[in-house]
View 1: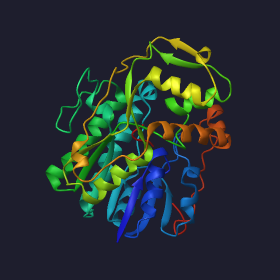
View 2 (view 1 turned 120 degrees about the horizontal axis):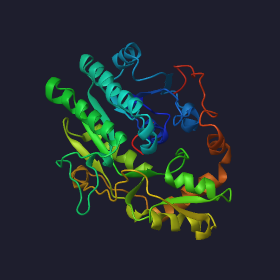
View 3 (view 1 turned 30 degrees about the vertical axis):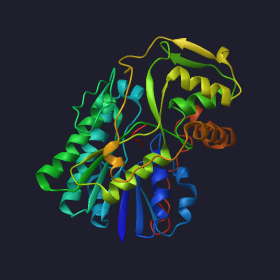
Length: 341
């Protein structure tokens, strides 16, 4: 029976993953370690607190003493905790490097000392940089162009170096853009949805021709669980299979679902270093049995509906990013980033 430590488990992707593995009969315990910064909210875990298998620790992955004590009590680690917003990285690169690189090193160092059976490091397609054509494979070079992506590429390399040097059973997953309920309203889909639902304007960078692949968060979590269970130590696994859209095509779908039109859209100058196109091949993970299951049109409609029905969850974050933060930890015996996107 595995005892899994999940860092960043109160974030968007991490909380979906925690709920998923709690349903598995062979998981004896899941401990969430989360600093509850602007993107991590204990409410994201919701009904997961009903499980006696869940424990929550409010703490930081840079706290070496805390990490050491927690890793000692677990058999596997799934590492989501990260600073993850590209625009924020332009103005706080040091924070991104500290959390994403040094935080990863703190965790994998403890994993080395305590014989962890599997360490899954959750990363992003942005480490490959822009691809005018074709799709990146796991063997392709990393060419990040912004501080966020550079910090994730560096953390990937740190984690993998501990496999090659010390034999720590590390797997790295890299996913495309995630979407789904509970995502922080700074990301494009919830940002546009929450503004349109309040009859506000939205802004589109450049001409809206940047291409992104959209993957439902549950499909990403299925891929991460597969890497945890069947991934080969030392390997990297791309997680894709979503749908490619330009930002303009995505905006059109969000407008329709929110009952708005193009009069609600303002074009603004492109942001700095805005990669035109990301694309990954995911045949390697498919070889382990991975198959995405969520249709984008249905998944987007369900996501927009969640934001329509749940203003109590996202409205405070549009005024004060810390308003919904809970600092009181639940009892460890009773209960309980951001990667990639």
